[in-house]
Image 1 (tube, rainbow, N blue to C red):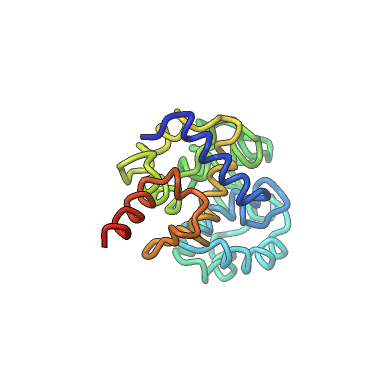
Image 2 (cartoon, rainbow, N blue to C red):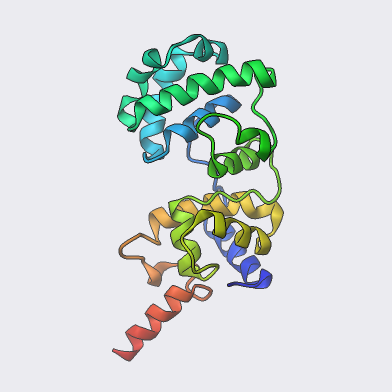
Length: 218
């Protein structure tokens, strides 16, 4: 596990490499981000961004989603996979947001987790991006892979990774760290063949250090 000092160096290196890192999902309204994150489950952000313009044009308000039946939403999200469950969750979430929260996306983990289709990953992203809540940690597939390679953890379960990262990352930078980790995982630290030679974290990363040592010994 990395210390807070090591974590701070890693955060600084990622900030230098990706100064403008933000969520790659495109949205205008808070609930649109909530729905986009739901659509992104088992789907790429790129695909979600391709289908949400037509979706949000067809259902331009939260009330429009709430008034719809899931079957009416399904054709717009079919290409995202698991479209029936996702359409149902969006419609039910819209109704719940209007009836229980005055049409606003909740600002606490406890309340967010009550919404259909919302888990800790989605809730943390909402808290970090919409409410700038310190300590928000989004543990997605990139975060799991890179947290293990870098040496923050040696586990695969998101529920175990989240508290570890929260304990060592600067709270005010944890959300942006997660966005940068996603970008780094896409362009450098690939699942099958990480580009350790080009990696800005090679001096801080356990995996890169081991890979470099193996290369020198050959």
